Image (cartoon, rainbow, N blue to C red; front, side, top):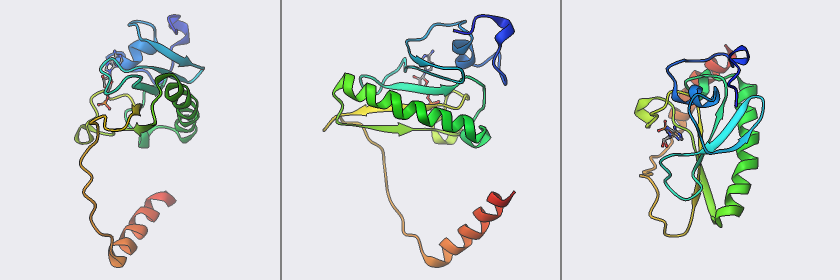
Length: 150
Ligand code: AMP
């Protein structure tokens, strides 16, 4: 993959398992690769065809990732997910992206999961919707909008 040290992708974290995969130091079951993005099968699949899409450069979370690189990952997700769906016969799939330990992120190198789904596959998670009120929405729009202007 990128075994030539002169071509080290930056930023790079020598202790990161996904950086090691990118550098060719440990193997993966590769599905797709281009200059900036890599996709490979998840070693602990939730369903058949469960795979990951990662930027080659090391960013811990999506909000730390340059937008164009996140966009390049999104383009690969669109492409790989269709091929995974066709190959596995999945009738749908989830794209999951965890940020921070509290969200369930275990590998601190930004990545997207593509998780093929079948009817009655037993996968799923608690989704307990609250209710958005107008005052709460207005407060959030102001606070988030301030962050977007920075
Ligand atoms: P997350 O909990 O969102 O950080 O997900 C990390 C994912 O990486 C898990 O689904 C792991 O099974 C997967 N994973 C960890 N190490 C490897 C590896 N060497 N090759 C492929 N997948 C891996």
